[in-house]
Length: 484
Image (cartoon, rainbow, N blue to C red; front, side, top):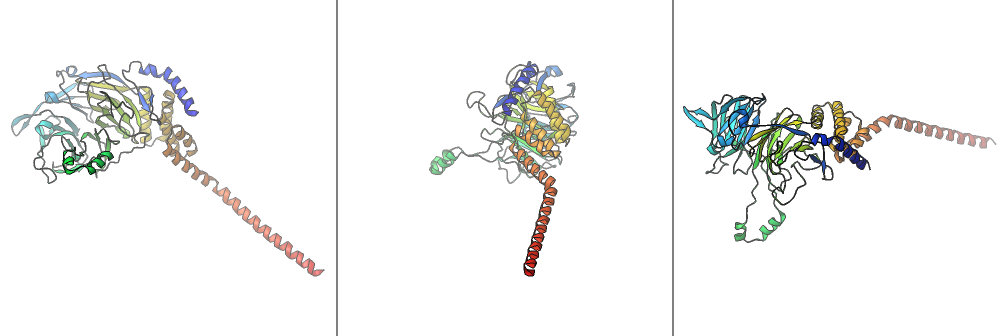
């Protein structure tokens, strides 16, 4: 009954507030509730403007494949079709173009590069068709290159086609390479190949396994091999955990967070798997599961993934809860023809649209800002302020289950488990409901244990007194009978 009332209240609020926020949004905004239903919600982000090559004065972008925004706010666009890097500052003012560099006294350049990463004053470029990683200074001077890796675990005829790249705090380089299914290639700080990280486990079909077992040797040789898919993109957080995506359509875990040992430690405490859309058509041009082709780790444990099938951006918190989504396929501002990369500049989200040859910028709405604020406060341990932010979110969207869970978590941290239970119930979160209930039971036991023990002692003493009086009366009666 409470859910029905909340739904009605939410509808009224959406009718009065959300349409204003969504009036110019060229896409639907929704989230999935506990029952896997797509529930409309206010838009968290709205498109603000787009930046093309002409806007920067560098001519038309041609098949741009990647983009990176450094900590100093500089924006690096990998204009792959033009074999160059376009660098702009945070105000989108052109800084420089890196199209060539000196290599042992000769001019050298890129050939269809597909990935870029910036760490400090070093620019790492996956120079795909030249089969090498090029490391440049901030001014575009060659520092060194990683090429032709050698190892006993690599086949003798191995061809190195790097596609995406990231670098950790120890200067280890993680590379996704074309045709490499064993995992993400790792290179140490000296550029030596040291192995793979995050090997994707094969999820074979039981029917295929049975058929393979029953087939003859000749038939088995004609069957397709069970080969894991490649990773599609990679990023890294401040703690050195590598985030990676793959586009295996049968995978329940297309997003991974790899620790230094290469183990997946991504938290998946949300209602549903971290894989973009969970409800979709099975057939058609836009049918099938989300095709996650990029990932960006934001501050406060949040991360966003880019779905290049339906051209949507999904944002999750550190626990794997889907916070919001935006974007769609189209030509309008805020939609994409073929998105290739996603980045964050503070609360601004930038999406590189390869098909549209432009970068589209999105800014938060009041709803999106409050959600980001609440997640950040909770992540930084400011639970009381986080609860206030979540209440503001509920004022904008009373049907936002994550806000109830967020308030419940805050109350739980403040040891107000009795109140937290009610919020976890509204948020339909069994895990935290159980945690809150156990804590509530423990608090009540602790609160009343003194009274209980005192009562037991009083009862025990009363019983002793009763026994003494009873014995005394019995003995007194016996002495009186003996006298008579």
